[in-house]
Length: 471
Image (cartoon, rainbow, N blue to C red; front, side):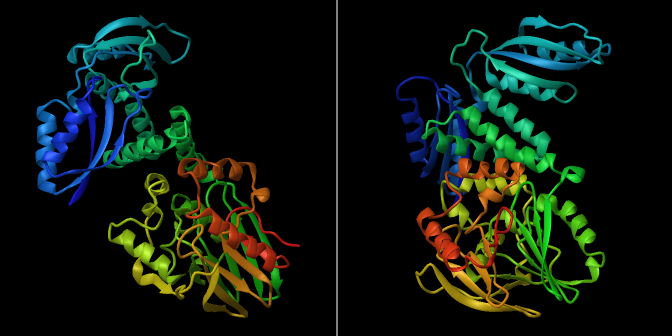
């Protein structure tokens, strides 16, 4: 049995979707998702179905035969393109030859030199259907920048398939995606749109938040990666370092006797930048013995995992990673509101789960209380008690408590919003918007957070995001 997403081109008439539904039923397929928004696209419907592979093949053939699939649409489309054309002989000729090749008519042209190496050319096009427009855009974009696309100069409600296409191509270029990754990206962006439109959110806002997420991971690469780095001397043998990236979770490093204990490890897409910082902090980094403890399984806390030989997790977090290796949904993806964001996160952050043979299970929670002690972990003179929470933020999350030195590492059960940098604040509003909430159960998460703030108020509190908190 498999899932398959169909993007269908339907007529704007009563009963057409019912006809498609009956066809799907006739092939023993079950509709697991349906998305339609007339404001975004009058004719396009996203359908996800679940069926036997052979039934899916036959279903695809019938939908194609009946001209219901997107590539067989027959709607007329008006579009205005703004092209950034290199100011050399022959470029405009090449573009006109593409229009002729696809039988696309020109309704408007405006271009002139502007004392630069480029001309900005506005071209109005009229085509029999959006497939032709898409093919034109695909071919032109191989040699010419398309800086904007506007639809229907007469402000009629028309098909917006080209908008989806342009957004997908933008993300493909920004993130250097394969076509397969681009298709997955577009499908899950549409799923987020479907969820948020129920809250009357504007679809431009939704796509702009996704665009912002992608831009953060690109714009802060290399020399633009500017984490806030601090340290605290706990004793003459122990120093704790905090690396706060502009986007993603905190990374803590405890140095003791030329050994390093990491607590969480940030986004995978910043691996090169973080390793450079590790070498700056610890000149003998490559030869130092190092271990990693993960507070929970979110991708902004576990991305840099392949440099460790021993990674300590709760049993539930181990199961989370095992599911990912098996191609199954992880704990976040079990939540339908979180699943599309997590799939985008995986693509944007270049995430790969840790190798299972490197994982060491600390213990497992067996009761329903807010916290249960599941084990202990010693690192030289530090002796941590490990508690697993009720999973309010994410199933399997743990906190580390060192009673003698009065230090607690909370993961995302507690974040210090007041301690955010401007970049961190801007980034940390993205996930709550696109997911609805970063918590699996906000009431449970709130109960755990209250216990930490009450019981450990006189500790050095090391949150999952934001600077540390101390009296």
